Amino acid sequence: MPSPSPRPRTRGDRALYVEILIRAPLDEVWRLTQDPASHARWDARFSDIVPQRTRADGAQDFRYELDLVVHTIRGTGVSLATKESSTGERTSALLFDTDDALSPLGTGRGYWRYVPTPDGVRFLTGYDYTPGWGWLGRVVDPLITRRFIWWLTARSFDRLRLWAEEGIVPEDTSGWRSLRRGYRPRARNCLSRPPDHGERTEIARRDRMTTGSGIFERALGDDFARLHPQLQRRFGVGVDAGYGCIGRGVMTQVRRGPWWTLPFLLIGTFRNILFPERGQDVPFRIDNHAYVDDFGRETVTFVRTMDVRPGRRRRFDATMIYSDARRRVVDYLGTHQHLAVDLDLAVTDDGGLLLTSGAQRFYEGRIAFRFPMVFSGRARLIERYDDEQERYLIDLEIHNDIFGFLFGYRGAFTCEFVDGPAPATVKPYREELRE
Image 1 (cartoon, rainbow, N blue to C red):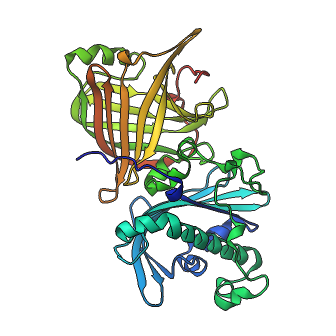
Image 2 (image 1 turned 180 degrees about the vertical axis):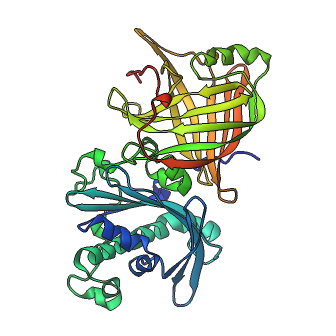
Image 3 (image 1 turned 60 degrees about the vertical axis):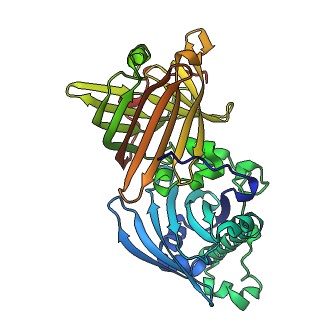
């Protein structure tokens, strides 16, 4: 089966973003948004939210309804609330779907973020969906539906603000009651883009570092909301998020190219970049931890450890940063960060993450040059989440421009999200300032 390809994004169908400042305690905002009964009272996108089973990973299945008087739209969803980070920030991810042919929204995914500040709580969401109504929906969505959904979400956020700040219950801010002075929720009180996009508001003037965005969210921008909620959690690992991720599973296949690819792979073993072994059903572990390196950059580890055969263990080390200069994630390969690789990120139609490697640069002491691709390979990695298996799926292939396939693996794993600092065993021996 071919891998899903990323869908090109245009201004008209970009992910929705809504943000509001609520001058109320974080715990109160959390309660009013996480309690299903309270949520359905202020959020005009739902008439009822009913929790179902709780999954082994803590995710909560639910069903929802939207009563339109002449018709009731029904659907299902999965929500996942993360732990509070060291900065007090909290995040909740969501996946929803419906089979109702009359629903203007099909499958969707997004997140809520709660960022405490001296002035209150920045409550924000980013989410995206597939339009309903077939070809008609795809035409109408960027012109009408998406704009209306943003307005409805923003107006609902202001209803929440009135409830949390002033104790005005949502029933008093709907229908004719909302016409009274002081009881009218207004969508214009919300931001439609993240503050660092230049909106001149009280929120926008704050330091950008308070946004708590990890390196992948910074690289993907609005498209981060299109990731499956479990991938948002996994690739949300960051210093401000306050947690790391340890994945354990099995690579069903570890492959390499023909015999003449061995020199490329053997050289890589000296710095934990590549290795020549191949096999099936190979146990592995991946460590993702965030830390601030010696140059003050937020860094996330991607250390894969594979038991390729009894008594032989191989590592594939990488540490990633977001480069403001290059406007992308830069991946330092190996134990000594000798090789810096540009990564292009995209979200697939099923909420997976596609990583494609680009230009490569070699750094050692005073030596610095663009690494010739004839001596290296281009990587293409897709990671997605399978709801039925409740596992992450990963598929990597590395090709040389001339010699073809070099190396690859595919497998499945589960994740444990852990607190605490990044272990020294996953950090590089040497750090490179040049990007």
